[in-house]
Image 1 (cartoon, one colour):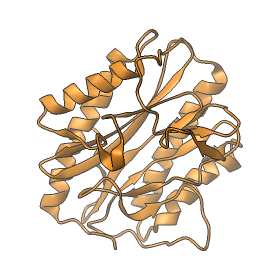
Image 2 (cartoon, rainbow, N blue to C red):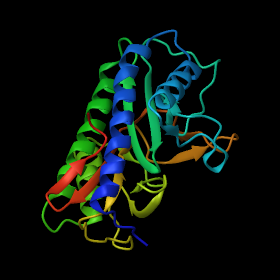
Image 3 (cartoon, rainbow, N blue to C red):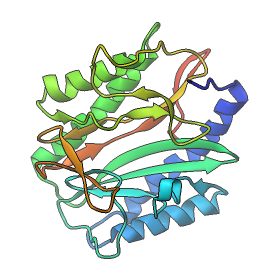
Image 4 (cartoon, rainbow, N blue to C red):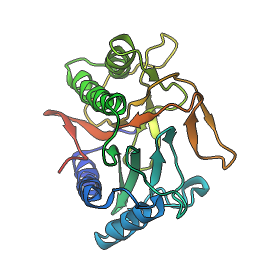
Length: 252
């Protein structure tokens, strides 16, 4: 069941989202060659706690860290490690959820380390554009959830030939990390397609692969990688439909 949020609840998610957005912005100073994914996670934990928040991912369904830090062929749920050191040319996606006063926000950004290849840079630019187009589609009068997937799929696959991940999707958020509705990045007539109404809060999160859309989960039970080991990108914002239109809640 989709849980519609009242204005004061959206305000709570908005406040949580500002903390998350600032943390991701500050990572611009942290993420560079020679830094470990453990260092990134440690920074996120400290920043969120300093701002009275709770790193929602920590302990969620047994997840061991505060952030999901996914490098190169890792699509999502990369577990931070002291042994995983960033190299020049890497891309790294940082997926964070912040709980503040009981309200949850969710956002992801993909960072480029040093000088990435033109092909990888293009993948990152296109994936960010997919997010922007998904938000634009959701904001239109009378829009439905699959309008988001249609916009993402057209940009990623139809126009650029990239693989669009199907095993994982965006989702409702606000009272918990994962709520209804599911927000896929592709279209299938068998998928639920509710109309976007005031009070709906959900995460739009394109996960786009340079090669195949197919993925696999590693033995740790968390890390999701591309089957062909080609790079993947991930961008995400939490948005809310209000009486005044769609608002992105994870922007400063």
